[in-house]
Length: 197
Image (tube, rainbow, N blue to C red; front, top):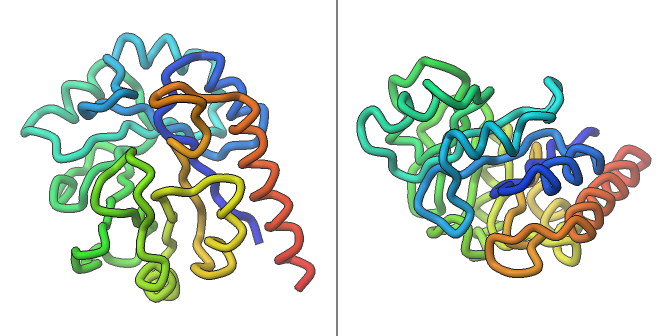
């Protein structure tokens, strides 16, 4: 079993390098209003050395019409993440729909991100709902994860992958390289143990 790991809210080239070196599968660059918000030009600079095998995810919340396209005109993202209603009919590149606990999961068989009501706040998602949805489609679990609780989250939900942002920060919006490494190291340890069982 291989778990997909996304480090979201990357704001510096140093944090991007730390995440890639630790073995992240994807990095999230936030273009929504947030302490982690980047302009497309800054995101280009931050992501300049991210290798091709690591997905660059452009993260939006509830974008206005044309907002995603305007960012993609400058920043070359591999995937676009936003709340599912905002992505219906979007076809410019692969998408990662965000589903929250209260919303019906009408997203089909593709992978999606499941989190709490508010993004980037460390609010825990409902793991019991997530576990049910994870049996139906590839679910990436987000919301309040860190190196201390990710084992319980994975064992409870059995997700396709995990997504962390505030759980690897020393202060709001500031990624900590040691915490990034510790989170990914813990996920890979759990991954190996699950293969053996």
